[in-house]
Image (spheres, rainbow, N blue to C red):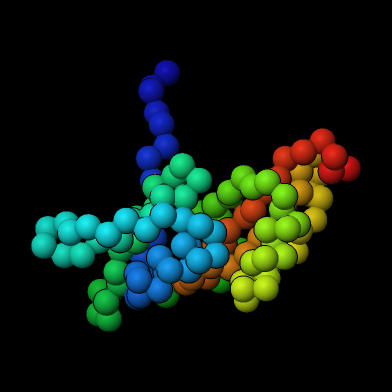
Amino acid sequence: MPDITFDHVHLRSPDPEATARWFETMLGAEVIRSMQQGKPRIDLKLGGAKIFIAEVAPGDGVNAPPVTPYQGLDHFGLSVKDIDSLAAGLKAKGVEFTKAPHVQRPGIKVCFLRGPQGISIELLERDPKFV
């Protein structure tokens, strides 16, 4: 069996600064700015994962974001504590929810929100109290 570990998620954005601010403001991501090959680079740390943000400039040949659901990578999930409180706070900040918090199956409560460029993000709380 190969030794495989998760490394990162890579996002493309026409405005990496705005995308980084959204993840920082809404989800508490740590923004890391650096230079790579003489160009500014923005990375995030969120929930122990690395998220890289690449700038998309006009004429780059990058397609517009698809509308979810679609084939391929559908969303990424973040494990949270107290999903109802977190969701209420995000709603107060103006975050768009595509699915409100609900018990998906016994032991798990989820909600989905729309991030920058239509990114679908699942928040989930695992707890036996959810029936």
